Image 1 (tube, rainbow, N blue to C red):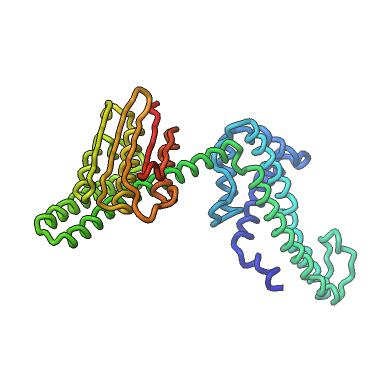
Image 2: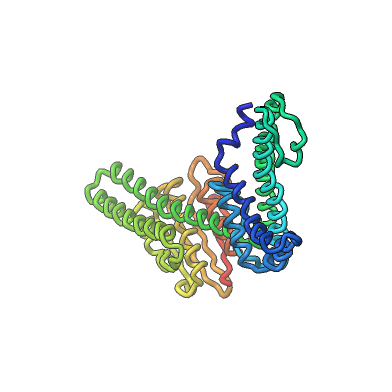
Length: 384
């Protein structure tokens, strides 16, 4: 019983009732002009609904009164962009007018009917009621007094729910709007993924270098080596802070150019950082690296960074061979180092997945895994 009465305590019930009353204002004004043609306001709504801006106003009203406080109401507030949208708006206006008639009638006459039943129960006649003008007063009519009010309650709740469902169906996003929202959501997810990769690559590399350097300095017992290790940790930390600031800048400023991100022209910093961590890096760079397209150069830098980070993290201070070649139509990037023990699996880590994902986004390929006694990371990125 309490559950059935909950709509009485909800503000939505009364805002929906107000929404259903509004069309009758125009109808009431017209009835003062010509009561013989009550259908004229409904006819006028046909061309009105074809105006694109009308859909905006109806959507705002529906959100405010039919679904107040709902995060995802499913009701659009954009102008009609097609004839299909205009037709749906016209149908909505007619449906709203159609539902307004019984709502207004019931809101006025059902309470009056309940009042007249009470008068009959009190011994008075009802000469002004067409249904009760010939009924004799009797106390038993008092038992019927709640029935019109219950009917009004059910009618208001039901018609409000029907109006809300109709608004979501007729004023809801069109196929083009749903596609646009889906594309926007996809772009947001891709941007979050890119930011996650940036953080993983830059911060992961810096922490790996710092850990390796600190461990080597503690084990060496050489003040000179310790000074060099601390200097390398400081330089790597500063570079990581710069990378972190770039990534945070993406979050703060959606229009910030990506040209601020490091490219393969800055690869010397990565190689020096690996060397100061104890790795013996044999690097060979050939071709016009500085002339690489921005996306290829930036993603190539991150792939090289992740590959060197994995060497330091899993193999330690070992010989590393780095080959960067730029040919006429592609960038070849290869990083090889002796296999550590135990032999890792075929690229199961998130960093190796990130390497393959970066290459795939540019239409290239990346392979990670054992090769002739070495661990190899090889990426081929097209320049176009």
